[in-house]
Image (tube, rainbow, N blue to C red):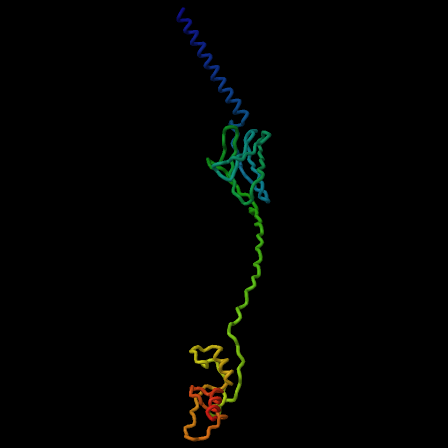
Length: 248
């Protein structure tokens, strides 16, 4: 009796296991049939054609049975994150990829259910047409402030006092009047400046040239003639005064 129970138990267990296995196989079969990944889903004549504008492309292929395919694509072969899924099962497939960039290489593959079809492990490729347009960012214009005009102060007026030059005939004989100049120390203070020139003018413009006094004893002296009568080494109006005083 105990042996019969064990046999029944074993039979029940075997039946349950078979049911489970058949159930799993059935579900997988249904999934495979629904996804189209069973035989006949392999893509044939895979092509991709870019539009002239370069912003879209059409991927086409054929299969031996009607399936729903998904095109996965992107600009990086290791990251095909963009995808377009067919809405109707067919044997002739035509999928449009939009919002593409011109003159750029794209990578793509076809997915049917859980199965991926690519170029032997390497994604298919195509390059869009046209020239990629780089947006130009207008730089804000910066107005440069004009440089203010700065008036430069004029040079300081010269501190030199220009004195009039008194032109007198060049001395033809000893004691004649000459031009007063600015290079002679007329007042004998050992400094040559405008005071010397003024002193020369006050003295009548007579050059400070010593004229020897008459050496003839008893000679009549004409005080009207220039001579160093006061023996100071200069001939000027003081000498004439001295001469007239001596004659008295």
